[in-house]
Length: 276
Image 1 (cartoon, rainbow, N blue to C red):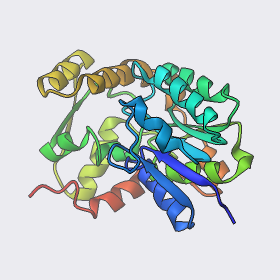
Image 2 (tube, helix red, strand yellow; image 1 turned 135 degrees about the horizontal axis):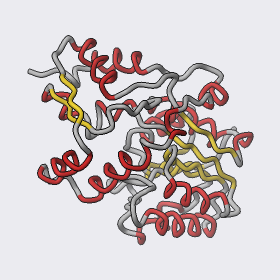
Image 3 (tube, helix red, strand yellow; image 1 turned 90 degrees about the vertical axis):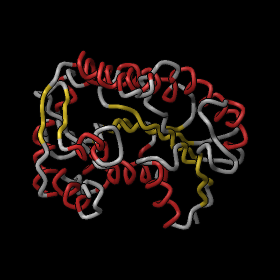
Image 4 (cartoon, rainbow, N blue to C red; image 1 turned 180 degrees about the vertical axis):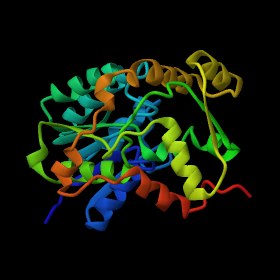
């Protein structure tokens, strides 16, 4: 009988809520770490962290909006020290594939003296249905820089399943997994697949990064997200390693990773891309 107590920091987010569901379906003791949970966990309020970690054995860490942003390293250092002091035995950290700043956060966890698994994920499929790419898709015209970039988009359900395995089984201790989907897609190919599935006319137009960032600022997108998007397009997408399909999903889960087309088919049925 597994008697561990689990904490999912970001337990209402894209991957976190699915990890919570996985653990609950197994009948395990899991707490959600969020600003609306009891006890609450707020990345912006370090005074909330200790109570959230009380009596917790294993923790899944997702940092918002991304481990690459300024201040993330200090937050992970603080959290890791506190987790060790509280007797946490295992940390699973969601990281970003090809993000140098995120890798500095990984090293904090790796060198903490606590068992760990690092999950480096490619860009999420769900960025097109639950995040900053959704509104342009609904408008029918998507403007994005880096049209030549090819990304092995990964589904959040695959990430959550890998995280769940890492939390449950010690064979994953000390591992760094690179989680991707099974094929590479450009932004235009992504939009074409969504347009076909929804039977909508959705146009894609490449723009310069400078113009794109200017547009985000005009739309009053929060500064940390503007910084992150500029970083992702100027540093991460140009990293050759990020245009590589990895097979760690298959290694951990003993099944194939979900293809982007399967995600599109499933998501189109929800109506999230429909325009009334």
